[in-house]
Image 1 (cartoon, rainbow, N blue to C red):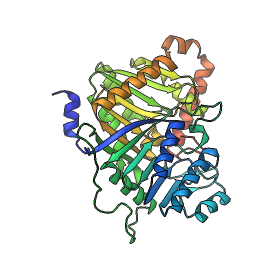
Image 2: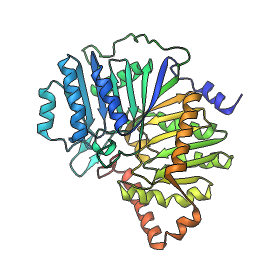
Image 3: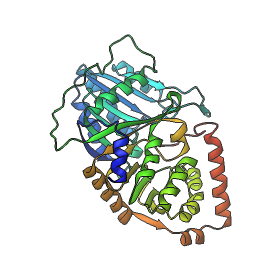
Image 4: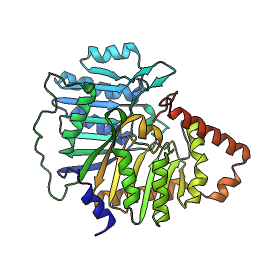
Length: 395
């Protein structure tokens, strides 16, 4: 029995009656949102980190308003810090239209300080029947605008029994983990699904939430490093792993697993990118290949190993995602999907990335750059343990 097969046997937790589709960021993602919203009949649950009051945000709101006119219940939650620029007028417009709106609030926040959890996951659940999970916010940055393609990212569209679990998660977060006397929009019984055996896909929900003592997404990454036999491809827009992830990456590489990292070449948070580059020499020493994506901002958060298993969602491989945010990923235990994603990532590497070698990196990185990168690294590492970023990271 292969190592990956033993992994799946020891870690069941998967629901089998599902079918899925990979959705790329940009226009394809927002078209998927509009299609799901326009076909809704009973309830829409949308929870997101950043909701901007721009063309993309208003396009989504327009669809939500039309759903309300069809007597669909709409629940929209945005993170209280990342989406704090929403105007009072805009929020009143939502509420006057019949949209139930709520900010997710941390333990303490002001315009310049934030202490506590961030609602970092991005979930759309419609009618307890279909769902969309990924790392994409509601903003022009993530959409294909005239002359400006959206940031590179991915999401997973799902039909099946996994949606019932996502519905319940959204409901609990909306209620603040306090049981409500009103009837849950998810109900007790799971709806039936018309999914053929050939379409069945094993999925499991993985969550990080330190208040609820959940560290499942981080564990999925650790399991990936421990059980991979051949290769791993990881894409992370904000890569700054903690000690546990680094330890397991190093062990996997020492075992002969080929690890490729697809990281941002263009970043919207340069201090974070500089901190990330401070780690490059550690990656080189451990034989881990580093590729920087060049066409536009990279925002994706996916990983795949051995063409057998994949994970996709909101989780960045950094300490914020590990310890400070509410994150949600979907683990996909399906060879066909993993092979497809593996090939897609390899194509991105070949066509849109530059391999960063130790020689080139050190040649173009003089002592002043290295010192600045080290300062950024320790600065961000210090902030991670005090706050969850003292500035708005478009993440």
